[in-house]
Image (cartoon, rainbow, N blue to C red):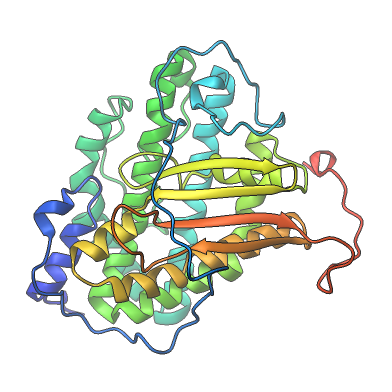
Length: 364
């Protein structure tokens, strides 16, 4: 099968998906023209369409500041102002292991889904292009920027199964790193994870179109990945309860939503069983608004985020509900990308599910 030929629009699309891209340089006067079905997809309602939210607060998680805390995991109380340096070195080593396991799960899930749709030969062909054109050219920069170990940019073998090469994979030498470097490694593992997944997604867009990519994302996040993701976070960060606080902690240490070039989030719990998560920054609005296509942004977000958050809430507790306070399209770049409220149904709610829940720590 010959390599697909890119037109100018697809080249623009691929360039704007690179990590850390300057979106101001990609602002389109005329909207990017790309084929996509903007009618046949599920739209999730906001709680109140008349309310909008401007950005406020900041994401503390990646701040490299002195901390008197040495949290061994995240089994303790929810911390709205959590910083990764609040964890002990051993806990940060666990976060690196968690991020790698999460990353391998996502790559293997993408590969398996494509193989089931297109066949093993096509999957291998796509994988080769993903790594050759999308990932490997970025590895030296990422390794240097995030202080990965010096010998981690070797060429992975692209013909022997699914490639889960990762310059931030667990390594015994990390034990000698101080907490500041460990946090940088954690943040670098996030950027690398996003780079690889974005490269798989972009390859599908080039070959089969946006609609196929959105359909794959919906399938993965709503059906196949989430139960294992929850197990991974429980295993490495000891998040084992079934309440709103557990879900808030889950997202704070989720390797796909660490702070950095793609995401900036705030977290608050105004009441014991109420949590609010706000994405002040997300790469999807930055990308699609730069390309002049907030209509595609709407499909992008509705095809990914509600499925993952709503299904994860149900896994934690069938009585946990998710209200969407804000979701694209948004009024302007001064407004939040999206905003979510978690709460618990009470027995007088018709949708309440009588069930006895127990701490999962004994099941680890």
